[in-house]
Image 1 (cartoon, rainbow, N blue to C red):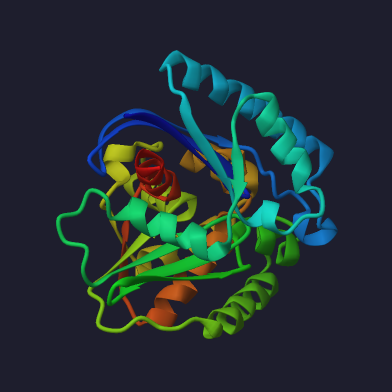
Image 2 (cartoon, rainbow, N blue to C red):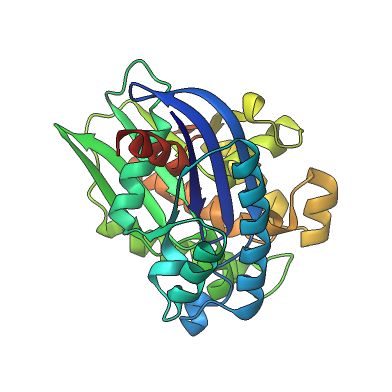
Length: 299
């Protein structure tokens, strides 16, 4: 079965077109991302901004073209943190209707579950694995406890915390310290998984830091599976915090939509590692869109 699954994140929209058979993704026909920043000023206003909705519509138009190119009829988009937190989510849903892209606003726990399904789909062994998904508006910690998937979501995404704590770039030390203290406080509400062997980090922050460490532009095959240690995360947090957004883009080939929120994302990544007591993450390019594709095939 051919399906199209879309992850409408706070910072980026991701489209996956895939062939799915017997509960497995057997072929990826399209896997693309656009930085939309639908969550712009959501933390401040509790509303989707007009310019953000214009960017969203342009993205839907592009995604609709790709969906039609592959002749897909089974389509679903999931909207996450930004859509959960606003008064005018109906405006985003209306844009979906305009481009025949059904949108479901999902809870943080459902987002975590889909992310977990996606991040483990290519693994033979799914035991003793924890997932971390740093989004633009929220961050999810996911693990399996007996027969249930436990997902915990808190509002400490890289866009949300950049807007809340960072006033300019290079980032002042005091602002980094305040942001770090806030993350430390918020993650104490999480249930800590026990007896795990590996933590998989998905989404843009770990992928971007892996690219910087490797000295490459984004390449899914090269990034997937990279080990990202805490010393590497801390090294690049310090180095990137000392640069302007333009310098990060020029020197390290980052998109603007990633370059301006990378410090908040990196601090979250480091503080969660400290909370879990781990020394490294395994970077994954898979996520909620892959889990959603599997769900679509079973619907």
